[in-house]
Length: 283
Image (cartoon, rainbow, N blue to C red; front, side, top):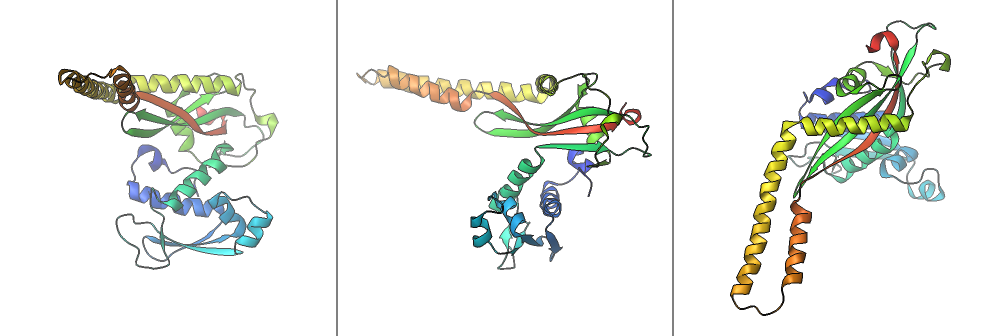
């Protein structure tokens, strides 16, 4: 199974199909035996340890050994728009309990990993460049939160960084074969410095995106409308003869409106992969 299907990066796959591929791919990577019973019904057999990983339970403890069956069978219905015809099935579509468990497990397992870009020809003469690839989750936060994934790679020799470099690496053939230290070129950057470079690149990427500014100006207009409504309300209370001091209530209302409607951008790294890339294939 490829490390990452390039269609994930180009968003050339429908969201529903993407979710089905994620669920099937996760269970396969976990080592569970799977079988498609229907186009949207997936049967999976999980060992006790696999079920512990899926559900975030402590592995190989007295509790797990005695409370869980040696082999558990799940029937996952992956069509979120309809009801499963099989009474044994539970929903595995996006935003359901099982889907969220898989997403959390994938983040735990794959938060930090080490990979190799497969060279055209194997050989002891190949020199590998260490490149670290970060996966950021960027959120535009206001009354509602809009999230998107941003991948950025940093060359640990030169400090070169960018999304195109990350896509080129992630779309190539990758494996987990260990690279001998003698074939790895010396890195010039510390991981902390590389992370700082990646953060600055994400900041610039968000700031250059016209859609970010469209969202920001729309959010600011919405904030002004909400603040005006608060001011109008308390002004009306004063005109109607309200004698109590409303300054504290007004300040609290303004603070609440600003908390809910003030636009802000949040970005956090959720994945990191140290990838050894053949020197001749990288640039």
